[in-house]
Length: 429
Image (cartoon, rainbow, N blue to C red; front, side):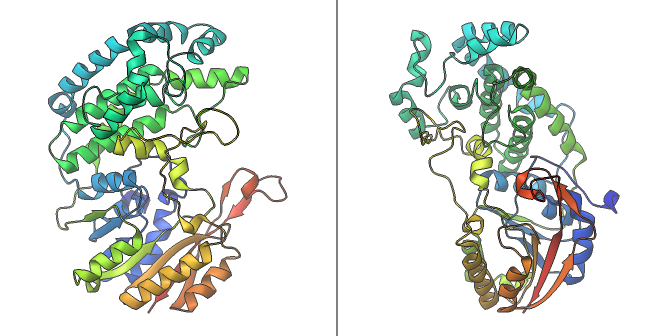
């Protein structure tokens, strides 16, 4: 069955259902109605929507903008990527902007390239004192770019040259300077593409590339610390990874993507209630046969763990949060304005589910298929099922196998990994 289900991973993503797709689709397909649409209410990285793309019309939605970009690429792009696609569409603008930033950061690029091949202590002495937004920059040529007046002008007109956000904000922390220059230059080249859907494909490839090269444990909450010999070695290996090469690798993957011209899939970047009321105002809720609902599971806010993908897509030179205990910026260099989901707040999660079930039951007769694990913020899962039963007739399908997650949150008495089971809660009006 795996061979029949299309998959195309963009980000390493918390709660992604890619490994569970055969089980998931087998258990929700009996509730899918021919000719009816599926609304993926919290679409994340669109793995479920993309898996269902060959047979159904998908309406994907997520409050995070990077998610809508990935959904746009996977669900709405139905063309072929050619061998010479990059050369024909991006290369000229990419190289011209790369040259521009190489000139701006010439001295530090040369030092970085040399020291990444040298003793780790020499490299980190350089990296910890190199120009970075939030540090005092003494280099006269570069200091203008770190001045608040310059950043305020960029916030007013972020698409003005040069594209320099990552080089200023994230070099020597989450990425090397070379990696940031490649990111900024690819981002510039992508913005020169006229087709919105094609831009989404390229941005998805860049999202993949920044995920593969980030100096972290796989997400973007905080970068790795150089506080041990092994830690330093690990960071240096990450910082040698080519963003450009990984971009091309993912672009090549799009050559084999699932194409379906039978449906005009839709993608939205809204709060889930806004989407429901929008469809209602357009008299389109009767078109929907099933709402697939995969809300946040834990107290972890996605806007914290994936703030850099959000910034890459928005490219808006955000204000960065201050450190809570000491002077300077937060280690994660988080966006000051970040969406906080009430589904991830212990005191508000149950009320949020009550509200969601109420809004859906009052406005649509469609079936709901809710994914939730038994080690989530609402537990035991019976508590969530009892909430659903106040609005719907409920049946439950438990995952046929268990998957494990390492770490204290998922351990038994702090020792070993605790089995986690996924459930699908089917709600019928």
